Length: 141
Image 1 (cartoon, rainbow, N blue to C red):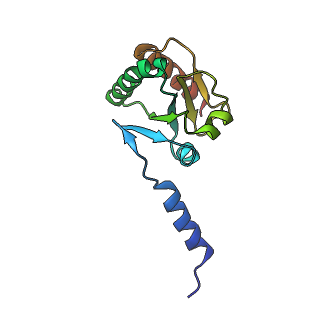
Image 2: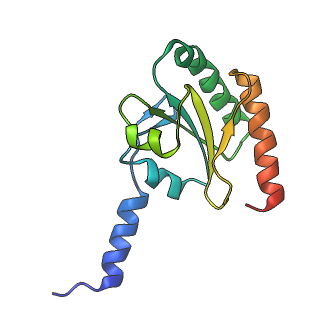
């Protein structure tokens, strides 16, 4: 029995986009292997690049708080985290020098990713996220 190329492509498409991510309290855990799949799948992906340092540990509850508040506000943003200690390919690709670092990836936006550079707390992150999403919507991305 011969399988048509269309059937093979369909199988590849379903397997690629039905990726089952590990999560931590609802936040997707990314790595060098699944990072590009997530970029292709999610329209708005906010990634916290974390190295486990003192500042990263301090920021984690703020990031989780922003995630929970985003759910209440029905923001169209998927939250993810990536360990910089074990995922060096992504760290190098996006030139992550400081940690924690947050980048917002927008699927159809040529200027993506957007880097969060404000004070690392929940309220500042949410305010920046609202402003950035409004800007992206205004530009039609």
